[in-house]
Length: 398
Ligand SMILES: *Cc1c(COP(=O)(O)O)cnc(C)c1O
Image (cartoon, rainbow, N blue to C red; front, side):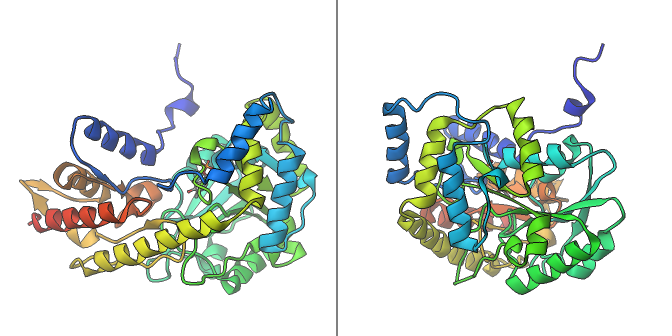
């Protein structure tokens, strides 16, 4: 008898979480590690949001809620889409899940079947291909280029389309590259989706974390036709420093949302009642803390991009959003340290952790081996020290 299912055996743990675990265990041994591994804001959840949660507890709002979320939160989400993207949704077109990751998971379970192909541009968020595969569909990876700011062109997209194409995954601003599509670029993607008739899954979790006046556009807002084919996956984790609260949401056609509701009703049931109340405050309460956080991220971005581009043979695209940089370190591949050759992004990340005591996530995990991902959701002090250490370590390679 096999103990494990083939499904479980084929799955590896999320590599971003694994790197953080290793860095934390070194920290616990008293080694001072600078971590660029984090996939979450370093700020605390804003006070008004915490107060809303405390109030929910005190008022006894601690029981099951409707599976897909309370109406109050759905209405806040509807308001948010109207306010930020001029998108109009009904309650039946919204479902709240236990984090954006869970939203995507349920969506994949609801719309994908064996034989379906799902186009995913690389570099991609680590969880997309496994979640597509867990729904028995096939990820079709399309490589983008640094030169093109890691954005897929309509021609590249068209080339990947087959009669089996069910959906295209759009993540703008992107984890891991921070690149973001302009309205014009999205119009072209939308045209392809409409003419070839496939869904666009738009992961907009970094919508609010953008720099230098970049104007975020939701692809769903471009026309009624593309709205019908778009499912938006979103959440409060990144914008409001609420990663631990586990609230994500999805907006799309009734039929899809209702299927997701059924899946959720037989698995997790409702997301935490208290976190739902907190999320109402997050979405429609004061947004002033968001501005402060984004402004701090912006200063760090400018610094880290400058420093990285000053390292010989390293190139780093200046991201339009999110809180990651994705520098190209591949000219260091082939060099050695103490007789050990560094041949890829995993070797280099191990070298950085062992020799520089700096944690980064290897690009290969995002489908792009020339790169490493560094999160700048950490203090300016740590960013400076971490980059000093990286520079020093690279000098030891011969
Ligand atoms: C963080 C993240 C999410 C969702 O995170 P949750 O904590 O599950 O809400 C979704 N997509 C991308 C690209 C992310 O980086």
